[in-house]
Amino acid sequence: MSSAFRGYFPALAACLFLAGCGDSPSSAVPSPGKTGIRMSELDAANTGLDLVLTSGGVPSREILEVKGCGLALIDFDSDGDLDVFAPNGATLESPERGPGCRLFENRGGLRFSDATERLGLQLRRWGFGVAVGDYDGDGFDDIYIACYGPNVLLRNKAGRGFEDVSDVAGVADGSWGTGCAFADTDGDGDLDLYVCNYLSFDPSNPPARAAFKGTEVLGGPLGLPAQHDLLYENLGKGRFRDISKPAGIRAAPPAYALNVAILDLDGDSRQDIFVGNDSMGNYLFSNQGKGRFREVGVDSGVSANSDGAAQATMGIAVGDVDGNGLPDIFTTNFSGDTNTLHLNLGGGFFADRTRSWGLGRVSLTSLGWACDFCDLDHDGDEDLVVFNGHVFPQARPETMDSPYLQRPLLFERADSRFLPVSDPDLAGSWVAAAHRDRTVVRGDLDGDGDLDLVVGELNGPLRLLRNDAGKATNWLIVELLDDRPGSMNRRGIGSRLELYQGEAVQRRWLRGGGPFQSASSHRAHFGLGSDDSPVRLVVTWPDGELQDFGEVALSTLYTARRAQD
Image 1 (cartoon, rainbow, N blue to C red):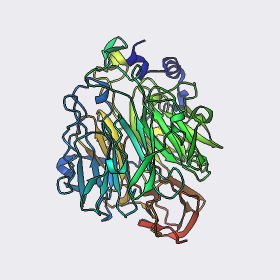
Image 2 (image 1 turned 180 degrees about the vertical axis):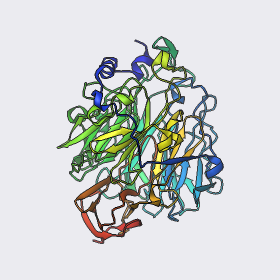
Image 3 (image 1 turned 90 degrees about the vertical axis):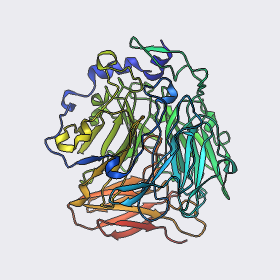
Image 4 (image 1 turned 90 degrees about the horizontal axis):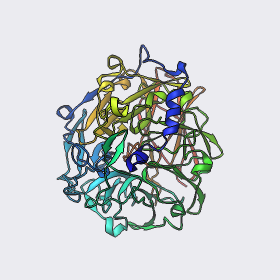
């Protein structure tokens, strides 16, 4: 079997099984006759987000070119609105000198201006993953970029510019970094840093071509050396140290890691680390306390799907799908395989419930990347978006059962099912447009209370999806602020938020990590529909301390400040 075939399609038998039986016939639900989700696609002419992302050439020739680069939403100047950052990539001909990163400042009304030069951002690395967090506790969010080559930490100089402090901070690893995340992994109150590493790739000596379904394609990842991930401990005073080995991260074999989610998965008030791996089992590093982790992916049930097959995990979404108060994990995978919904059963155990929730057969022909749970229609439950695109430019339905350019998948939550919405007359033209999409970030970009989306396409322009749900419904956006003296996790990354309205409860987790190689807004969003009854907010901070904020006003951006000791 060729390296490309094994690398990107590791579970042929399981996939054939799924294609044969998949969801029950009743689960093949057509688009609903109506939907509350309606979004409008805006391009650079309407928004000022004038950037065509670079990730190698067109068409892709090597595996280094197919992952694309992430995006980030960051309020870099602390003026209350969300700005857009793109690390951007490079080409095989000049892997260390790309067109450069870009930061677009939010001017209001969904208009952005390029502030890159003014802020002194001259980074021209081949960027992949992005993490946002205030690692030094000065009140301004900083940016970390995982690259092909030395990674970069950009310290925010009070909204006036950014300074490259990678070497001084000790985080300039030279591997091929992908997903990354800030989180308090050791419980000492500051933000540590986790970096996913993919594989060893030498542009001067690329892997041999391979065959996939009778077509010659690019090679990898199997057959290429996998790499160990990195966990950096925040030492304070702007410095980190690599604790991957003593923390237990290196006890797991090196893997093709692509994305990471850090949050308390088992309710013990410690931050666990879920790592999505390509073409091999996912990892779950269970936090044992005192800065130690144990890899329990197989034992917990998140390593593989219900057929025991390892997948090619790219995107990661987290939400309480079944309402049991625990965070569930949804992942995207390669074409011919389904995306996977791992429901959290409690006690550190998960179960694959993909097909029973209507998320199986519909994803078989898609190659999924970024995904996210978000209440797009403000009806009080979270919907699901998945953005897709094949890695092989040669992909055709008649040869690979899947096209190269692919439509996104939009699912509206309906009780205990997710219903696909594909009619452009209902949800907007964007659901019918095929792209080489890789990433998405979500946040309220125009201040109207609903979640807008910024989508990044492989070697394509940025697209903004404007949501208009907030104009006619109630909502609440919550920003956490731990401004106690000496606080080093001011945004409360790792917190759980619960919103009570009558007998209904909604939950959100401010996890470390994002949809795919990206960082969405750290603000939690709740849709409340037409219900005007009072709501009560309860926050469980990363260290387990619970704070009841009582009744809060509807349709506001509410700042929940941590109580003083």
